[in-house]
View 1 (tube, rainbow, N blue to C red):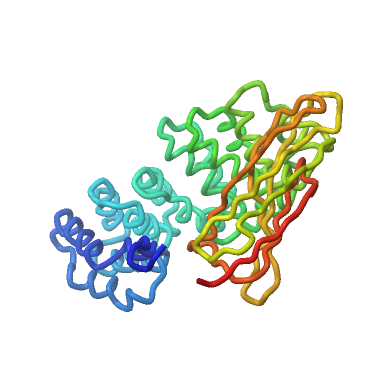
View 2 (view 1 turned 135 degrees about the horizontal axis):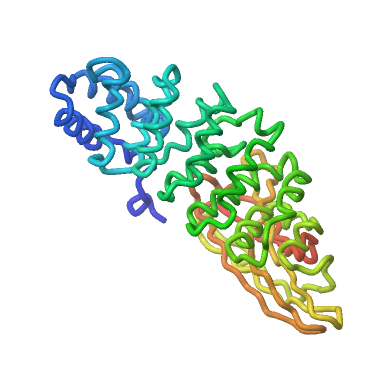
Length: 367
């Protein structure tokens, strides 16, 4: 992708035009709103700020430009949410609650419930969890029964022990048991949006307490497709490691009586920004049918020359006794905000039920 066609940086979603839109909206809701002050605060050093720093800058601007007490300001913030265009702008409203509302958790948590459909409050609820875990989880457990899928998702996503882009909830990393009521309430949720969040929360817990997760899942009805979907995605890290308990829960065969034939990694040399194709035949060495989880692992070269392995899902294969299945996948090597590629020799491994059965390499070059 050339520089001319590259997508705009995420942080540029909160730009000068967006901030003027926020100011216009607030000015229509609060006659004494200090528009000049809001824009001065939010525009200051904007170019150097990340997306989350810009979100917080909106919160600071709201605090310094809206008249009255926190309660007065909060009423305007809630009224503004349906009028703002863009989830990140609305996250600024949620951040205002997190930054200035800890002294009034009752009003603040009610506000986050109302704000989250417009711009997720998953980050904003976490200071309240850190301040008073039991009280906040009690409120969030009631959210898990809400009719709105965004509110239900806030219950599970906001309480994730290791939520990306946020601080870890140390007490839940140490002891995940208080999460059980929320996870149980959502284990058959009709919304994929919510189920994905529940799976991510459980996957977080597997990193510290896999035994707790397996014990917790023991009474889930896996004949229920929604619950089965959550379990499969929740255990993805354990499945990639070949954990026999995880493989059993998703109906995969234990071990892997199979071999990989004709592994091809092509092209052998390519430039950053291109695609690599991984192709092979998976052949059973057992006379009985098997259900096998096939993944692949790329050892990405880091800036310092060392390698960082990353496992990707490929397919779950129902393989007949002594049967075979051709498989192939193409992987983009374009730079993303979450991964920067570096030149060097990259090793590729084919994993079957977590076991590395074959490997190959490709050479990545700077164009």
